[in-house]
Image 1 (cartoon, rainbow, N blue to C red):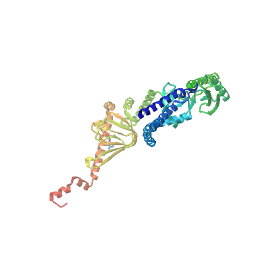
Image 2: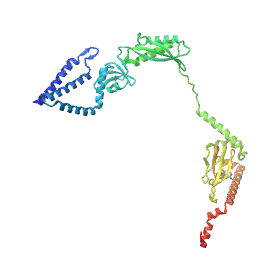
Image 3: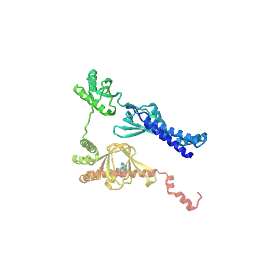
Image 4: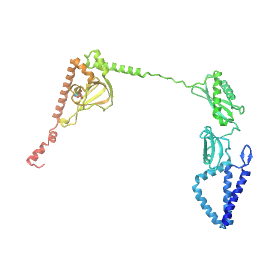
Length: 439
Ligand code: CMP
């Protein structure tokens, strides 16, 4: 019967509290302010009353010793407290909000910079409705830990600030008068407190004015902003005052035309360069222009290889600017590389492979930044066919260069020491091993 009596006591407490709650606590304090006691306070009180009844029932009816009940309830609270840390944080923050009352139901708060109206507060969160009609449940702890901006409910006026730039030509007194007239005419604006207009600063293209207008339309700030801004425009327009805007100079480029111009300039330059070369000096102007049109202009950085020994190649290079060095690997004579020549502007290379079809006979490397004209075999072939003199000149160059290469290689060969040749052929070793001489 003791257990039944305890349960009955707790249920009785529950029922009595509910009666008190609905008959007294939820009664409106006054019609404007809603119920006498907020929901959060009622909920906390309910939990307190029930906990007290349980405590009394445990000690008085069930005859449990008070310290044991208190200790077990303390341990239980610690466990529950840890598990419900976040929830409790919100509950206590909610209680602090109830005590401080930084906002009331129906008031507008700034939530992430956007206005939202408070609908309801509870033990865990505050329910707000945004201008887009979205319901947001903001945890109580957020409000206790951050700055809160309360716009009010419209009962007290609040001001919006507008910044307007007006021409340097307009006297500030006239502009301020026009701005104030526009503010007073804007729907939703208040006569008192009166709007204010001041010169804020001198901007790049306009004098900047600050207009402060008061309103009670807290829930429709966007519309109010629109109203004031629009009225300002019309009023300034009527007064002949201009709102300047930065002027931008737009340069129009005709890309195709420019590309055509660049190409024509390059062709002219290539024609002049080719005409200066002894190789093409006897070319007819038409043929020279044709050759220039087929040429490609290429840039190379210092150290870049333009032509690599042993590779196939079918183009002739003419140096426009910079220098190149021509080297040949000395593999055939067992040495490193041999420097053959260094060519500057107007020099040409690559004619050997072009004419003979053989692999490149040497490596050509840029010595500093180099610009070259590259003439493909297809462009040269008709000229060679038409002008036997050119073929002769080219073949003379080839013969001369081949002779030069051979001479260089011979010279290098002769320079090799007896030791070098011996080391290479291991002649001494072979003699020693043949006569079984000690090493
Ligand atoms: P090609 O063999 O096509 O590629 C390497 C080029 O180096 C070669 O043509 C010649 O134009 C050039 N060349 C080779 N030997 C010499 C040299 N002794 N003097 C100048 N240029 C050379």
